[in-house]
Image (cartoon, rainbow, N blue to C red; front, side, top):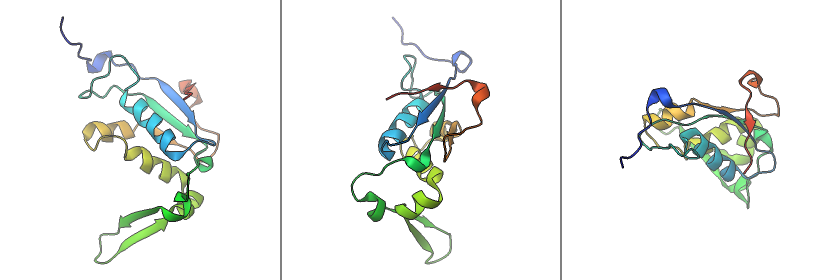
Length: 142
């Protein structure tokens, strides 16, 4: 018996909605990354991009456990000498909660072309409304 290899033409992509209200940032990011890669499908192959589209709503109501809200920092470099910037997660969650969720999901997909392609299918919204009702997304429960 030979191993099944999914082909690009055979892949069907579904749309899922994850409600992040009251859930921890890490658990939401894990579920989103698994859906984006297609690890929930029986036809999963690590060398083929067979994942689905993911919509995360209520990003502003996601929870960070422990003292991470005050101790965890987001670092980025501007490209100029000595310009390493840091932002506390309490500030980041207050100003750009969508970015914080996207950053968590980005850290859980592979750093390859397949991972970058999978991140294009991620949509994160601050509130409960999204504009993808025409795709008829199904709610993902975990």
